[in-house]
Length: 297
Image 1 (cartoon, rainbow, N blue to C red):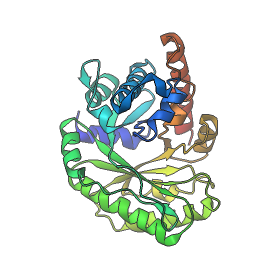
Image 2 (cartoon, rainbow, N blue to C red; image 1 turned 180 degrees about the vertical axis):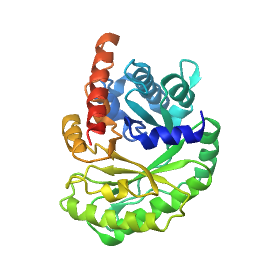
Image 3 (cartoon, rainbow, N blue to C red; image 1 turned 120 degrees about the vertical axis):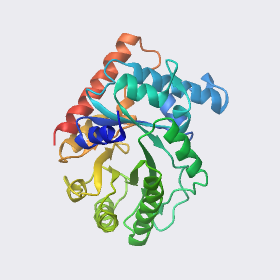
Image 4 (cartoon, helix red, strand yellow; image 1 turned 90 degrees about the horizontal axis):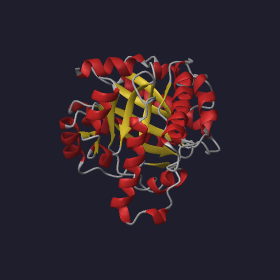
């Protein structure tokens, strides 16, 4: 199928995007929640073997399919590995009907002006070239807003759109993720600033381009509806941001046209020690609840 077919699947919003892109910094915590302690592996290579085994187990579960899931965000080392002797992105698309994305950011700078910008990405062009060869449809990159600072939020949005333009020019669809910290004391005010800054950037985009947005579930339901309805936006997805799955699903269902892209909330309750029957039942219930919340609006 063509990129256009994949774009139509993502645009339809008939499902959610699974975030399987925990980075080196967040992998130990993800593994602990999965029941794998740090003494079970020695060094980064074994750690990534463990997390890839978890991701493979999720991807191979019967419920992980295009019936409920439209896309999956992969970590670079996940893209470079295989599931059942197929490159991961190929497996996702050909065996599961799920559109593959790639996390491309290299982590966050220290906080300044109430935000954390992305670290520089000197290898981005080379990474995009590899992603294109492996059949990746789009990318994802995250920065964080910790307070309602206009200059900081403007800088975050500018960085996201500038790098997003580089990605668009290479033929991939970028997911721009300026996350608002759910613990920010002025979260609602930060979301107002963020909405205005993103709208300004979208309005300046060429008519023939579209980006995706990954945003924290807002304090006010449908706050981001103007972005969901914007012609330069292919899809708006929500991050769980530390909310429990039940809380995230409840908030998501209140936002028309927004679908999930959950990571920790997706894997909540999964354990390495579970039998395949139990594991598959737990992930099926998780996938169904997130799917129902995604299509509720």
